[in-house]
Length: 440
Image (tube, rainbow, N blue to C red; front, side, top):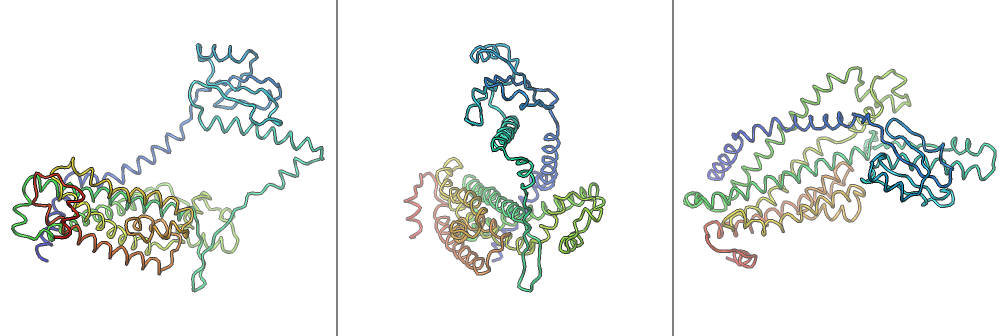
């Protein structure tokens, strides 16, 4: 056991003390926050240039319907369609040409937009919104019922469905499917990234030591299995260290930003109490945006200890499962180029798990979500998507049991391959050859 601890210490210290590790650990949260701030800032910048849209309306019904705004100006023209297209292709006077050749009330498909570039969603949504509203008004007017339009507008209601979770003790908490979805997808994606990054580091480290013949010296002092386990666990500790540092630094940044921009905010417990008694926060002169209020209350309804604790367990379980396979692949080849043909079958379940997690988020209790959270090669990612939606405890225990047993099995198999392949040079390895090594 002391030999494994020495290998763990070596793998951990050599990687943690690298300048690249230190820079990435401290700069990643800052860069991530800066990237989000940059996206928000750039998204708020408006284009001052007004784009002109030519409108060829054969029906002459929509002259007063298509109204210009700060971004788009509609210019009605009357000329043959082909001539307009040709002239605009030469002069680029208009950003596009809107052609209406029939009454849209009778034929909703009688409208076409021509442009040199692909039309953006903002312009398409704006045009269809104006036309849809007009056609709906014309259809309502055709019924010839007095005040029908006003009655329809008054009947329109936006339902705001509040979700409340209650525990066995009867205590209620405000929930949010949207927040649960975001938390689940973020944690699943983090596990996916760490498995890929640090699993690849294990494989690259094994290949490098084998290529440099360092492993021949190390094998004279330790057993191959001890070397493999020390390398896997040491790199896992590096990943956990980096993750914990990111959590701490992100929390510090969030607190700093909140102290600067969060003046006048209300604590979550008081906000929740006001909502339970039916008092809207606006009535209490709360200077917090309603969306932020809803978000904070929903976050307060999550079981952070369970999510964080199981995140670490599934992160370690998933990493150890895949890292042992990556180590086996690294020991079987002579250079990193040869690792591609063997690493692809290992990567496919991870990629599948991401897509399964996306679908599982829509139906966390469905068959796909359940079975993929039990299969060990997909459970670390899919189960993290399901956890914010309150997975039954027996499913969590069963999933973890299968994951642990699978990790033990893959480690045993990887150890056999590692033992044989680590000292084998100059031979092209096949899957059949690796299967034979398992029987030695």
